[in-house]
Every structure is written in C-alpha cells, then in structure tokens.
Picture 1 (spheres, chains in turn purple, cyan):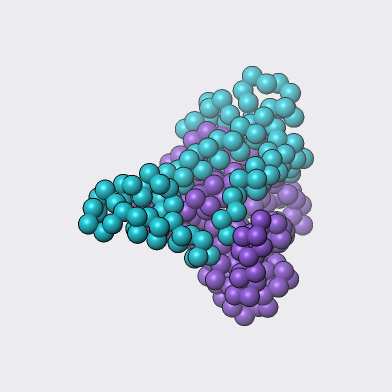
Picture 2 (cartoon, chains in turn brown, red):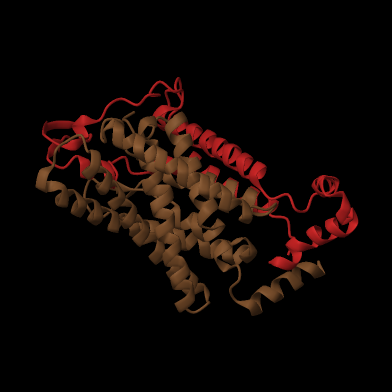
Length: 238
Length: 144
C-alpha cells in the first residue's frame, strides 16, 4: 500500500520555524481552552467529541478535484466552527491532527505546530469570521445556512493554504526564489477546487444537523428568537 | 431545551464509522492539494512516485512514528487492503472520539451536577447552598 500523507511532512519546513509555530500554536490553543470552557457544557462536550471523530472520518475521504491526478480532503475548520463554535472548534481540529500525527504517521510530529496553525487555527478563525458576517446579512432560512456553510468553508480552505505559503517563505527547505508566488498560486488554485468539496460537505452536514437537532448547531444560538422560543416549548411538553 | 444529545451522538458516530470504515476505501489515492503543489517541478509515474526533476517534496523525511501499528491508515499485519484501511479508520474514529470527547468532558463547565453544587456551596458556605444550586441548575434551561 502506498503512503497516504495529507499534511506537512517532516523535512519540508526547517526546524527553527517549525518550533516557532509549535510555540505559537500551543499559546493559541491555551487561549482556545480558556475561552472554549465557557461554551463547553454537558451538551456541547459530547458534541465536540463527535465533531472531532467525524472530521477524522471525513478527512480520510480524499475526493478527486477537476485537476487530473490531484485530490483533496476536508480540513474541517468551518464545520467545527458552525457546530461547536470557534474556540472549541479549533480544539476539535487540533485533536484530529494530533491523533493523525501520533498514531497514523500523517503529518510530521515536528511539523505539528505548522499543521495546527494552518488547519485548526487559521482555517477555523477565517471560517468563523465569515460565518458571523454571513449569518447577519443572509436570510435566516435553511438556504441561508447552507450558503453560509458553503462560502465560509470554501474560502477558509484557501486562506489556510496560504498559511502554508507563509511558513514556506519563512522556512521552506527548498529555495524557491521568485517561485514562491508560483507556489502561492498553485496552492490557492488547488485549494479553491478543494474548497468546493469542503463547502459541499460542510453545508450538507450542517443543514442535516440543523434539521434534526437545531439546538446542537452553535452558529444558530442567539439567532432566530421566534424559532428558538418554540423549540424548547416542544421539548418541554414531552 | 435539556434534551439529551446522546441519541444524536451515537447516530453521528455510526455515520462516522461507516465513512471511515467502508467509504474510505473508495477515496482518491492521488496526492492532495498540498502534496501536489510540493511536487511541482518533478515528474511522477503512474503511482505518483518521483522519477525526475527537482521539487520541494524531495526534501521530505521519514515520519518519526512511521513504524506505528496504524501508520499510513492501515493496520500492520492485515494483508487485505480493504480490511486494513477500514479497520484503521474505525479505530481512528473511536480513538479520536475517546481522546476528544474525554478531554472536552473533563474541561466542561460543571454547572448542573449535584456533586459540583455541593462543592460550590462547601467552598462558599455563607451564600446558602440551596439558593446557589437552584440558580445554577436552572441556568442551562433558560440560557438557550
């Protein structure tokens, strides 16, 4: 069986830069733990565990993109931010990346800080900023929710891919010289296509959860006051 | 809105187990967006192995834990590729749920447990245990 690697491998970025990003990631994750605790209650904690497990599963499903010979897979930042919020969401994606690096040999252990920074921190943060913006301007309907999930997922993947370009600029082990712009363009192009897949998966999943258990969608909290007051009444009668 | 999420959690886990345990075998084996970008400048054969040229991917070194029994999303010792990938996916989903769910469960705010309320009122004896626990217990229902 051929090697299946999905994240930054050892040797791609030099040690000092990898160490700096490891420290940066650790500090940011600490903030996520502190802020995330406010959101984590008896209901959100198991939901966050499920979101992490679900992202692990879907990350295994590399899908073809329109460019021949290239595949893509879910990163999960937007999905996690929609379902459990930005702070806990970043922790969910981080758990997946840690398990993959320590158990599945995917993404170098020394590169973990770089991978966490791009996919768990930058990806989730970009997604949540877009989610907060889009949910304000779009109609509060299933279609509005789907568009929010799709757009935030797609663009967050492109932003996360540029995180790698910055890291490569700082500590890439091959001197690309003026070709760094080429790397940025190749990464952005590939991840725009991957983002379409990410958007479809995220929108489908979020709309499904919103249909079954709208109370378990973090992004819907505090929205639609009318709907929110009827749902607990139904639950309370039971 | 104190509906227990456990039925939903179990259902969601089953979906994840099917995706990682079965559907994963139909995933594309081509390099992903990152790996293919790093292969630019190199020529690859049909199995995506580098056969010439020069590109960033050539700097890649072995993984520290390449000998892990689940390395590369397969279970070492299982020859059947379908079974090996599927089983590694199932184990990965369960492990991720255990690690993530366990950590989040330990980190959660304990506002609605009787034992925790007991601790709170023990720590702050002057505030009156009953009033405190009643206030915290009703908070989750009213908040959402």
